[in-house]
Image 1 (cartoon, rainbow, N blue to C red):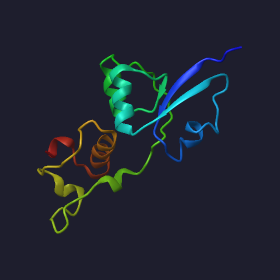
Image 2 (cartoon, rainbow, N blue to C red):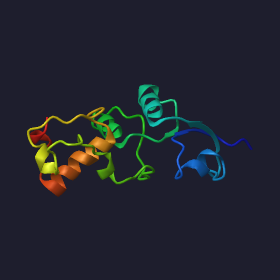
Image 3 (tube, rainbow, N blue to C red):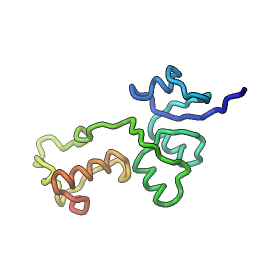
Image 4 (cartoon, rainbow, N blue to C red):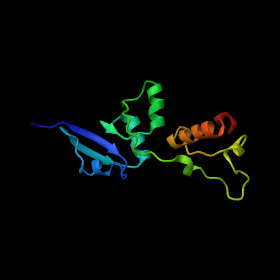
Length: 136
């Protein structure tokens, strides 16, 4: 009997490698695996949905779902969890010593909806009381 094929796209990491390299199998299916960078996989997944299963940006998924435009259904598997405190950089020698010092200041982000930025904005608000409205 021919097994159905699933087209899977993922980022090669210590948490996904066994699935991507075939050491872990999906019972009853043959996988066609495509490895790529997060940016490439996410863009392709939302542009034309070529994958049956794909690692996605949570924030992009949430936006697409809210618009009723996501071709995917989320499952609760967060394969790139990390503490986002290490994603925050301030200019050396500057006067930003705590998140509160960012009020009224300009902050740079690569893209507003990027998931790491969503986590950081939430962390600033919940842990430090600095809302997105207070920062440019």
